[in-house]
Amino acid sequence: MVVADLAMLQRLEAKFTPEPNSGCWLWTGAITADGYGKTAVNRMSRLAHRVFYELVNGAIPSGLMLDHLCRVRCCINPAHLEPVTNRENVLRGTSFTAVNARKTHCNSGHPFAAGNLYLTPTGQRTCRECRNAAVRKYRTRLAERAKGGPS
Image (cartoon, rainbow, N blue to C red):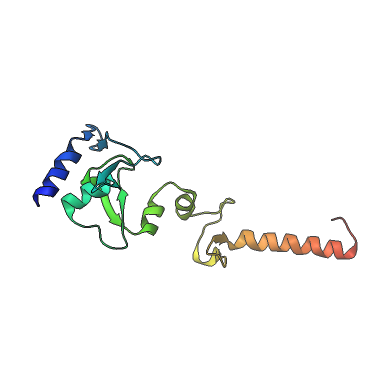
């Protein structure tokens, strides 16, 4: 580690507080609107967890981002950070995409098994049984309208 890096490391170490229960190192400096710690490096604003990780572990591999394994955005503990793809980071989270990707059954309770799984052209998983029932109901309504029945 060069002297400039050592000075940066000492500056960063002065701006976090260890959390005794979780092991998180909570950033006490400036925070972004999303809750991530931020610091200045060569007059440029950078995310504190990324700067600290790179000082301790080296460069983040190209195409990867850091995932907070602890789920605490202001944590800068390098042991709580793992380089992963954007897809992996999203799927590990709590967004609608992540929650839906973890579902094993449709809302009606049918399993998303190989024979009962339909992938839409946009890549969404759909229950084949429920989809077939909806298509049958739609066709019945169309047939009734064609006969002049209730709409």
